[in-house]
Image 1: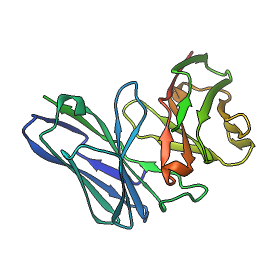
Image 2: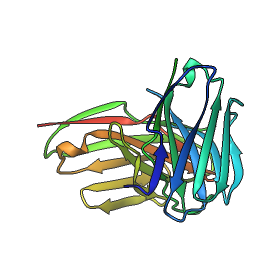
Image 3: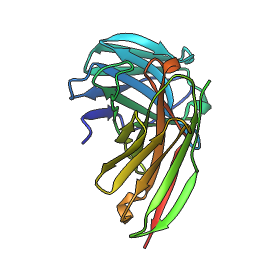
Length: 116
Length: 111
């Protein structure tokens, strides 16, 4: 148990569907992250929220839309996805955001997304 | 820009010692982290080095040389359960404190 729970674990959707990924952290952390993990590629940071405010958007296509209603919950809304969006989507949290010396990130098990 | 290099795969036998290297090119480096990820599982934090030297935590140690832009993860007394992917990640001033991950090293421990 990492203290970060993601649902669903697996998702298959068509390119025209709309779905949402959910992340919940029980660690009292103030920063939350979405990453994309594809085979043979580094983890790609997608979005960062600190104290429920978005602080980073790494040129992610608009078909991905994050939402952070409170410091414990993070959503990733998906619509009109492409086959290349098939990947493992990981949520993480850390005590705070910034350059503080050691802010280990705690990851969830991820959602394995397949786009048909 | 920034880049990290680590070997894609390493194989070792149970009981052995293995070293996974990571070289980085960044400006304004803050620190080097290591994460472990088993197949189908979540990445988990192993260590963080901000200063030169060796940090030891049980069977795992992590080393950093800022002058050489180089670090490594040392795993001793290898066990089958150590078979996993290991990622180095850097914090640098251009990333506003975010982690930039390497592509990972897949470690296979054989009996």
